[in-house]
Image (tube, rainbow, N blue to C red; front, side, top):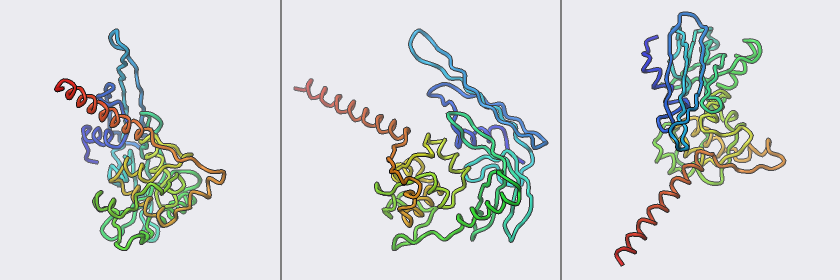
Length: 283
């Protein structure tokens, strides 16, 4: 595997949560190992500084990555710590692998299992299946998941929607609206894997037990193909979530989105106050 430590750091900062410069600093301890005993550990030390109420958070990430990689280092926005070809079933490649997903806060978790890969036109499609039972049972479950992912995209609009189109083009289809409701089970049914869904949920501080508006989820990750696949599939199956919320459900707003809206509101209020102050002085 040809990857520098700086490249690994960039990948981690792109796809995983860590202590950013706004709140403190994160140091990395990354090493490549010959065997498959990969390891990850994260820690956060909170330091009080000065006489005023401000805390400095010092984060540390320890990564031990195997040099054995038969797959790309990043697959579906999750970093592989190890991947090895296992076997081929009806043209579908099966790899044994260990990958990294977001946990609570700045924690990360290693998931062990299988990555299934196949070609669709010019693109490679992957599906992560975590280790649950025996290899044969897990691989069968992974094959069913990959088949869900390979299903043709439902034709909702007159013009066929492409997953990799621009954000403006996707928004112009009016698929993203304030009436479409999404939940965890919708994501799995649309063809997304459980590891990828957990990774996304923890990255954006969401919950498996809650429902969210499609417009809010799209705002968080407009370029994410798994989000687009989910929205298109849900447009074709708008009542799917009702099977799992028979006693009723409440639509939640992502906490990151609430912070963003509060910030924008404060900026607007501050600007308005400055304008009023200027006109008072002018008068």
